[in-house]
Image (tube, rainbow, N blue to C red):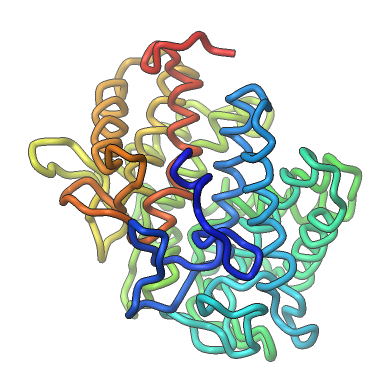
Length: 382
């Protein structure tokens, strides 16, 4: 975190906020100009806020980093104010563009496409940032994202999630009928409902009912309802992710009986689905891979895996996954250089890379582990 606090600014933002591929000298990759603003900065806000609270809210520079990411999402990364998804947070874009152009879709997105679930991630993060800062610009964008999602919501079934994975923001033309990550749209609706926006109560119930009726049971079949999450993939065949079921398991472990009377068995079902389909051995260490088409232990997914297993251990009192959690997080930390600069994974030496895997989708997981297993950090749990 100290290494990132020293990150220089570009166009008023720390470099890692407005680019996905950054090297160990805070410089952009000369080849990769694509970026993933909603995921990278949304989960980055979650990470920096968790770290800020974990450190006792003492360092305002830490909170300022979260605000930089929120400002970038609100001011630079929305679709034009037209079409089916107007003013909606972009899933992909171009590094160094302020704001993003209308046709900025990159990686496996088409130029005018957005991923609805990534708007849910960004919206959820912005609500948390509003609650910490009371700056209404963050809440306004979160509410807007939520309303756009509701206006485009469909009835999910055994072949379709309530939103597709990709959609042309101008016309509403859909690509891929299943988006495996519905958890962060659910989290966004939760937060907005709790803030008094009752218009999200019914959509929230509909999302949860689809998850409970179709998505969780699908782990016992082929898992096709966990298809598609990562921005750089668009395989025509099923490409299930480990990220989506693990983050639903985290949600159930946090909410417990408040959301699901079978929270313990359902979270175990999700964890076992991931272990059975995405785990393996790397350099003698049990690890978790990202997805069917990439089973490498990138920093984001491996830290997610370790965190969810630690939370399960603390919540249930079961030691079934304790050692796997410790090994995963310990291995993740080998990706951090002595000066604090991270690498995107620990399987080879290096500095920098894909910032979501280096940092923004990793720190919050490490904090979760330290909170769930305080002895591992030699700290007393706050």
